[in-house]
Image 1 (cartoon, helix red, strand yellow):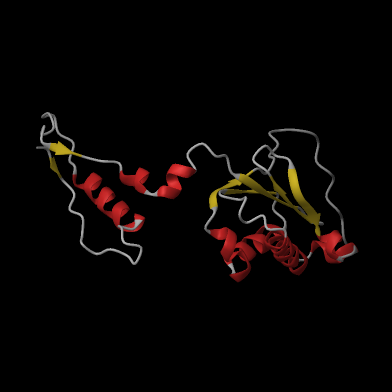
Image 2 (tube, one colour; image 1 turned 90 degrees about the vertical axis):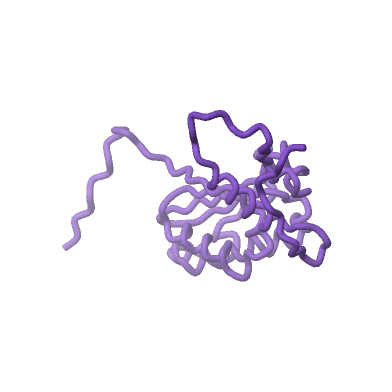
Length: 186
């Protein structure tokens, strides 16, 4: 009978089985202890990928994530929640929630916008539909930092566990068109 190299501890959570954290630690400890050598591996040793034991992982294998697009520029912040096929569900900007003119470009406006969007997601019952979420950041305005603070704060506690990827889609030009002339103040 083959010998398994990992030892499973007898500590079990209240659910009755081993939790994913314990199994992951065992797996990674086992992977780290393997040393590459020129000799063939022992025929009595088996190494298992235990990530498939988590029922959540089995359900999400081929399911693409929803997207939360955060576009923040110098004058405004736009947030759009889309389905996996990129059809919009919620699309709002700071002007839609009552900020006008120069107030749209502030940190506070972007923070309130992100909190408003997360509230609408909960209001409309979209939490059950969103199994995985990809956050797509674009632009370098103040709204970028404000939206990440909301996701990491108490308002984002429901969606935070569903975030699987954070990407940056800021457009960069290589050469490109001629820049606007700098303002001369004074």
